[in-house]
Image 1: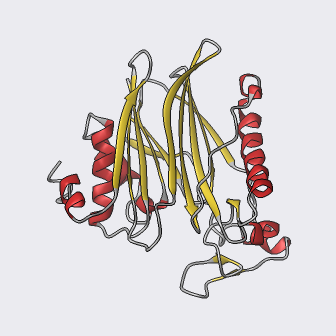
Image 2: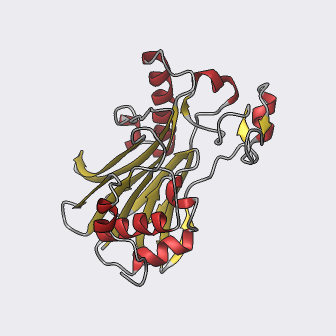
Length: 271
């Protein structure tokens, strides 16, 4: 591990960087997970929120994992689980995102510039994986060591047409990052009432079979992906059997590479 990164958890604690982590496993013990969250260097409270757990529902085991990367001080959770999932998973997940956005906008009056990206994963009976996302938090699945991106980075430059069709614009000013109306660096998000007419809140939804080649799944906020590509993250995580330690090592490596944003990482190891 030391060869992967000279920065470790004790050094982070010594530098007064806020760090939290944890781990768990499926009810049959065939899957394990670990997570690690590190507050960024910006002068505001931690804005990320995570979900990582296994639950029994209607004789099925569901792994429920999510990372919400808030901006302007907001963090969100998806609305209650949709019964429709058992019949039409893709549509149920999309509806959950849309309902969550509506709930946020209807119950919070101070959301003119606040919002959140999201990436969520549902593991169904250890055999099927459903991924959904808004914004630039990302999910990466490793099959036989090959990194497969399971989410879509919703960047203003790639969805410029949709933004402009709704009367908005994309500008690199201020700074050098494309932003919706010069403000938000993602083209899809929860909340953001002042930009809602120009933003989308419908997720991209992907599915995959968890076969004998699938070894790990990584969910992470852009605090990791700004400084590390998909294959690098997979290569680091696969070398560490304990997914809890793997998540902490990825966070430590992101800090070593001078990531300044909040860093939230979940690693799930199959079998």
